[in-house]
Structure formats: structure tokens, C-alpha cells
Length: 625
Image (tube, rainbow, N blue to C red; front, side):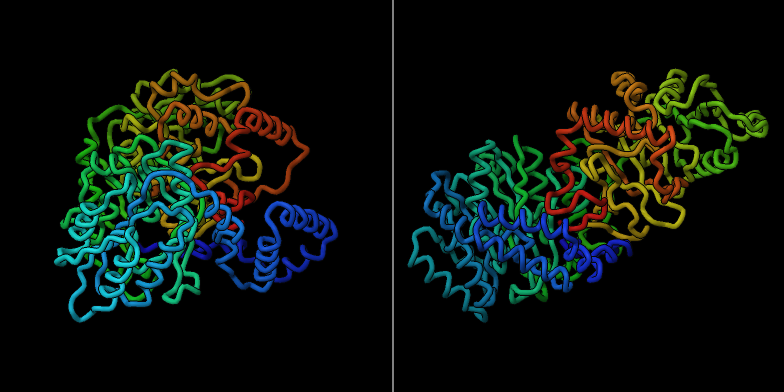
């Protein structure tokens, strides 16, 4: 799968400014910063030793000079850590590493082999199934020699049946209690198996996976970081974000089907991972880089354009899963984003959707919202309840009188009382007859065709709690693409201020995502769930955080909250309101932020499972720490 470099993929301009040389220099010379740096350096020297301190210093100097150093950002283990792991002789299962070999350059094969031999966890088996032709004997000779010298290396010469058939032959030879796949031209970190086995033993997981990086052919130049979220089934259908390193139990493989199938050649690992994660009892994500993809001409890491047949195979793999899960739908490769897929789910009925739109004056905004919704809903069975709340302009009430004629099944209900966004929506929901509710701000303008249908196609799924849309500021930058917990001490919007056409970190802006929450500016949910949860919290979150609070209640019940990039709209929210600390509104916001932190401190102080601790939690930009 081709994945863009998450360091600079369509970054907003202000991110680059933050990393300017001048800004870095000013921070370095600030006395408070120097004192903090001294304290942290002393702590690093005490806790992790001189090697880590030297790495940190080199890394910071490199940042100041705009020189990246993947060795310091990508979890390269310390020598002392590796020594301790070897000395520990961790007892545990044998891990069979299956490597289909095919015309591998000798240099690549040697580096792959050495990376296995240098593992700090010693209970491994290396299964080499060799389908090389006679014109490429180098790797075959090296493999035979390795098998003669180490009983843990199993070598078998096979007829080339394609990557899936060759991998299946490797599975048949493997005897370990756990298995993993290693490409013949890639490299493991020396602590890779140790970290996986330790995680398996600590958690009881039957499927674990790690972060990874892409390096150049000579393993020196950085090609990209793949810092992943925890398990996200919708994301996995839209993009094989798991890839390597994935370690799984033999019993799980046998239950899922101990084979890769030729009809999925090119996407065979994606298809296998889909099957394995369907059956897995516990999936764990190791938030460390343990695997290096080597990018070179012809490799998938260098670009999926090198293997165009893989795109069609990916569609078939995803569609096969949809069929197994009883989810009527179809996958389609996204043009210009090799390895990314759009899912279009079929509707399983025609339930009524009730759209709730709070409104105070701003008749022009409301007209734009309603006109765009009715024009682009792509679904007819819906009603609209405009919830009037303290309008003062007579023109607003005159406009209300025109609504039934202009827009079928659109009516106004009146909420009496001070503005309380939660209470207003809860009041409107009392009049809703639909099986699904769509909370919609009056400053939304729908852009994409089939908008309502798209949201409903996810909301109808029994495993989904809330569904959010892709919202843009009027300047065509991202306003909302899912909510991240822990940003700046509360929560923030994923990829905020990225360009509208950006693909995001590892395609996350253009593929369906699972998040802990989505914004209430456009949120669809089942009416039964809304009522069961007591609606939005009118006491603690009258205006702010009520949507996130609602989503978290659903997430804690085991439901998925989904962001779909295929429901697009402008949100005419002000991009920059300025600093307001004195008004009553500002004071109320601070109270509600404090309430939010008190209730969800465990999620705010620890990293969001759909984010990654390699990223900073000060901004929503997926910038590295």
C-alpha cells in the first residue's frame, strides 16, 4: 500500500512556520526553556543513560537546522535495552517468521536475514520458501547456507505459484505457536519479536501489530513514518494501515483459514489481515516502530503504482469481508490515492430521519442550509424540525411561515428559555418521529450529493453509535474530520486547517475513520440511542463539549463513532474568533471545559487510541513530537 509521508503531506502553512529556524533559536535562548531543558536532560541521563541523551541533543540540533533524523524519532532501541532483553532470555512461544523469497538481491536478503538473527528474543523460526528462478541464484544459495548453519532456519525450494500461494506454502512449513510475515527485502528492528511476545504475554492478545517506517534502498534516507491508531475496523477496510509488523497465533490463523488466496495477489496481506481481525479475540497495537519497509523500484513501499493489479485485488478483498459480515456494500479504489478505498454501503430499508436545526434569527443561513440539504440529501424519507430559540427579527418569523411550502415535511417548534444548545436539541428531539436523528447547525451548507444517504448508510449499522461529516471552513480548509481526545488539555478536530484536497496522515482524511467522537455541528445517531443516553447533557455541557460527551457515552458502550469523508459540507463557523477571557460566554466555556476534564481525565491525559503518542497533543496537525 502506498502511504504518503506524514511529515509533510499537504500541511497547512502555519505548521511550517512553527518549525522555522528563527522560532527554534528564540526558544532555545529563552531562560525558562533552557532551565526546563537542563532538568529534562538530567532526567534522561539518570533514567535512560548517555546514549539517549546524545540522541536527544542530536535530534534537537537537527530540528533547528531542518535536518531530520529518523533514528531518533523512530524508536531505535538503546544498546542497553537490547542487552537487557538478551540477558532476560524471555520464555515464551516460538514465533515462525514466514518469508516468501523471489529473485531477491543478495544485499537485501543478507540484511533481512541478519535482522532476524539479531533478534533479542531467541525463540524464532525462519521459514524461507524460495520461488526464485535460475537466473537469480544468489538468495537461494544464501538461504541454503543459513538453513545448514542454524536449525531454526527452514528452507524449501518451491515452484512459483504467486505471492499468495508461496506464502501459504510457508504457513504449511511453520511450526511456531505464533506467526508473522516478513517481506524478503525488508528489515526487523532487533527488539521486534521481544516486544511482540512481551505484549502477547501481558495482554493475552492473539493478534498484535506495530508501527513502522519506510527507508530508502540503502536504509539511510527516510521515506515515511507509519504511526498508526489502535484497531479501527472502518479504517482497515478503507486502507491497509496495519501491514507490518503483525504477529498472530496459530489457532487464530487456523480459525480464519491458514492460507492466502491467489485471487487476492497484490492485496493478499490486506485480505488475510481482514480475516484475522474478524476472528481475533484481542487485538493489541504496539506503539513502537519495529519494522522497516525498504522502498525501491518495484516495491509496494515505494508506491502502489508499481503494482496496479493490487488495487483491483484490494477491492475484491474488502468486498469479500463485507459479504462475510453481512454488510451489503461495495468498495472502490480512490483515484489518485493508491491503496485507499471508498466504501459505499447499501441502505437496508427506508427509515425516517429527523433533522434537528436550532435557529435564532439568521434566516439567510437557515435558507442556505435547508436549500442545500433538500437539493443534495440523496434520500427522500426525512423530516426537518427547525427549533426556534429567541429570535428577534420579524423577518425570521416571516420566513418560518414560508417553510412548509418551500420544503416538504419541514416545521418549526419553539423552545422557550435561555440559549442552551443541549436543551434546545433535546427539546426538538421530543417532536422527532424518525428512527435516526441528524443534529445540524443552521450555518451548514451541504456540498456533496447523497449527503443524508451517506450518513444514514453508517448510522443504520448496529455497531455504529454516531456518524460525523467532513466539514470545511469557507476558505476550503478542514474544520472537522473527527475529534481527537487530549488535544490542548481537552479535545480537538483531526487535521484542522489542512487544505480541502489533502489526503491527510496515511489517507485518514479521505477514508472512513473510527474516532472516539465527532462534532455535533453535523451528527447522525439512532433515536433510540439518543433517548437511552438522556440526550445531550444540559447541566454540565450546555454549549461546549456536549457532542463529545454524547459520543464518549456511546463509545464506552462498545459502539463505533464514524467519520465519513463522503458527506461534505461548509461550516460557516468563524475560523478565528480571537482571545476572549472576560465575557460570560468565555467564563461558561471554561466551566464546561473543567467539567469535561473532570469527567474524562483518563482519556485526556492518556493518548487517544485513534491517535498515536508519536504525534504531539498541542495541535490537531498530526505533527511529530
